[in-house]
Structure formats: C-alpha cells, structure tokens
Length: 323
Image 1 (cartoon, rainbow, N blue to C red):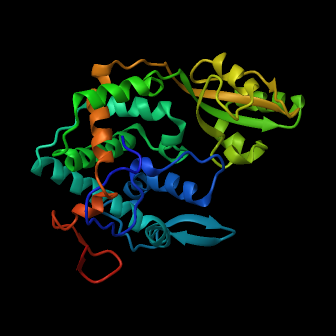
Image 2: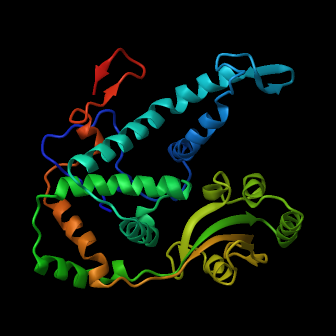
C-alpha cells in the first residue's frame, strides 16, 4: 500500500478524508483516534438499532435511563448521526465508487494481494495505526481492497522498468523480512499487590480491556482498553520487560505480573501472534512496481476524485448537490 503517494493531476478531495496509508501510529490517545474507533463500528450499531416491523425509528422506545431521565431510540439515533453520520456515509460512498472503478477499468484485486498488503502493514508500525488495528478483519480487508483498486487505477498506464523494481527490492530488504509481532493489551499499576489483585480479577472472569480502562496508569493505552498495538522484539521506546513478557505469553493468554523500569508493575494480554515472514522478489514484485509508479504521479488523490465520473451524488446535510 502506498503512503501519501496516490497522485493524479487536477484532483480535488471533497469532503476531506485521509487516504488509508497517510495515517500514522499514534503513541498517545487523542479524540480523533477515539472517533475513528467508534466510526469503525458505527455500522454495527446502526444495524442493531434499526427497529423491527413493530417499531419506528421515531418511536419513544427507551434505550437507557439515568436517575429516571429517559433516553429514547430517536434521541440516540439522532446523536449518532450527528457525530458519525457524515463520515460513515462518506466511507460507504467511497467504497462503492472504488468497486465501480474496478469494473470500469477491469481492475482485479485478489485475496493474496490483500494478504500481502496486510502483512506488510502489520510489520510497519508507522503504517498500521491504532485506529486501523481496532477495525474488524472484514472492515480492514475492505479498506485495503478499496485502496488497492485506487492505486491500480492511478498507475495502470505507468511503466516501471524491471531494473528499477529489482534495485528497489535489493535496497529495501528490511521491508520484506518482517519480525514476529504480538498484538498486545497492557495494564500498568503502581505495586505488586495491585498487579496480583488485577490478575485475580482476570482469573475470576473480568474483561482485560474493561479492567485496563479502570485501573491502568498508562494513559497512552488505558482509554483504548490497554491496546498498545503490535509489538516486536527490540522495538524502540518500549520497556524491555514488556517485550520479554509478551514473548513468553501465548496468544489469548495473560502474563504473570512483572516489574517495569519505572518501578511499577505490568500485566500483558497477547491477543494475536503474527509470525515473521520473508518475502521473495516474486512475492512483492507487483507491490514494488505499484509503489514506484505512484511516486511518478504529481498529485495526491483520494476516492472522492472519482465521484463525478461515477455519478456519486451527496444529499446528506444539504440540498441535492453533486460532489
């Protein structure tokens, strides 16, 4: 996948949306990250919230109550639409536009190509940010598919020599020999006793992410349920004690309490282990060719540049107006 090199002359992006790989891993949680995490699951919420035949969206059905004050389904749906409606609709339109582009330009994206891009993204912390990690597997694969379609459309007429591809591969071997990575949740507490108490709660069925939000002292991950993303051996700016604990913990298991460099204690939960991979030249030849072709294009482009071509019309929040 490209970084910010998706380019095409005289393109506009309306409304604004950051291309998939222009995003970068955040080391501290921010409101924008939280919004994206919520956005990644908003379709599920909307599907769940749609009433059955005996209900209407505008009904007074109660969905929550606080000290007797009721929140209705209508109020809830209106609030979700105001906060996330525009972004969710924009994502749906962009994905649909890219599928139309694939048919028009006879672009094919295989599962193997998506698997390769996913593996390369997960091996590069700067390309696989926390928000992306919290998308479901299906959502993530769809985003990668849409980005690949866009990349292929933009580069279909660009010719890159075999010599250039081979040279790039030789000079960037590190990109294609990935280390084993561990999808990790983390809790930090101030004393061994507190760590043992937390382990006791986890053993009795408490959810790790909920507990992390409640007690973890690591502000960068607590609000994300302890999620610190994918960690690799010898990763910079990560306490070696955390790496050692992660390496000795199996997937879907929780570590013992361990002491951190700052004197506090930590607990990790390993959600997933991705074994390191080495990609041959043939494995990544088309990927490199596409990367080099994107570098030849003069301007950044997002799917919105194709809205007019495929008659995408935006009605949300305004009178009928074609974007």
